[in-house]
Image (cartoon, rainbow, N blue to C red; front, side):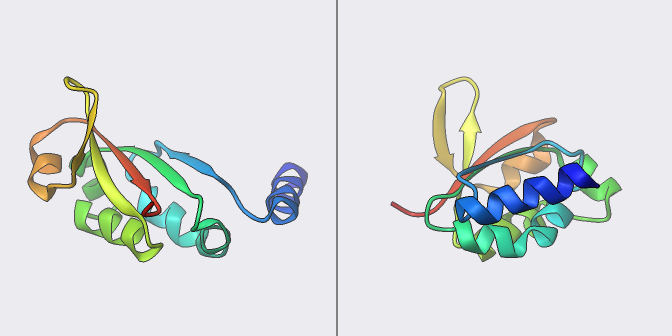
Length: 110
């Protein structure tokens, strides 16, 4: 618990976070919900990278729409990382249903 307390104190002292990587097998929505205050303090500079699958989200009693909604709730624009072209593409909910693993990039509008 000491490490968690020290980490939280560091985040408060820095005024928030700049980058958040989520790869927690469907727990992304719950993690974002638990980080509301930290994300609110960081919203103007925050970048979230999330690896997820619709199957993992379903196993955690969630859905792709809930993850996208949670990211957008924090004012982030959500894009898909296209592995082949190495481009960020506008989010298309149908993509997550078809792909085994999808990487998302969410950031404050510039």
